Amino acid sequence: MNSNESFFIIDCEGLTKTFETPNGEFEVVADFSLKARSNEFVVLFGPGQCGKTTLLNMMSGLETASTGSVVVNGKAVSGPGPERGVVFQSIALFPWLTVMGNVEYGLKMRGVGKQERRGRAQRYIELVGLQGFEDAFPVKLSGGMKQRVGIARAYCNEPAVLFMDEPFGALDAQTRYLMQEELQRIMSVEKRTTVFVTNNIEEALYLADRIVVLANCPTRIKAEYVIDLPRPRDYVDSRFLALRQEISGMLDRAL
Image (cartoon, rainbow, N blue to C red; front, side, top):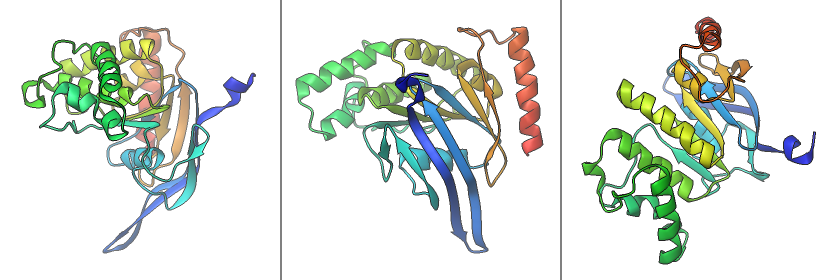
């Protein structure tokens, strides 16, 4: 194994998270450890309300762990940073900014000059298929288009890692399938180490290099599956369906 193969872009060790409640302490995450290599697409798959979002927030620096450590690209995570892009389920666009304004926002806040940031933003707007909508405001966009803007904004900062928290969960079924295909296409052009949260098994199998199955709260790793199916994947392929049944069964036992 060469040095690039052995270097982990994400290295989480012993993460725990406990919240104080009126009824005492409530443990959401228990002794979670995960490593991810360069350009690996890791899906955290678990039941609703099991702690997936809390995990992702700790890994991305949006929330502080009770114990444990997170290292991304060789640096300890102690808060948010431009090397970690986040795409949320709730489409968190600035309604007063255009598509271009939203996509270039992070670069603008970092002091990148107008010409450079516009050029970079334009590249990612085109990558997600929104050329021609640069001057449109979010209110004029469909749900799928808004989420494309969120993905372009995350990519525009050129982060080492992308964290995606059920980004298609609020979309209708048809748009969700289209966005899964679109994300697959984007990943083939712009590879990133990605941690993607979902409770949808088909989505997990369609996108993942590796699926990490999580137990119910307090969440911990129940099982891991390396998904070596060829891309693009077929939802009715016999191997796809067999893995779907096996992993779904593992999730049920975690409940």
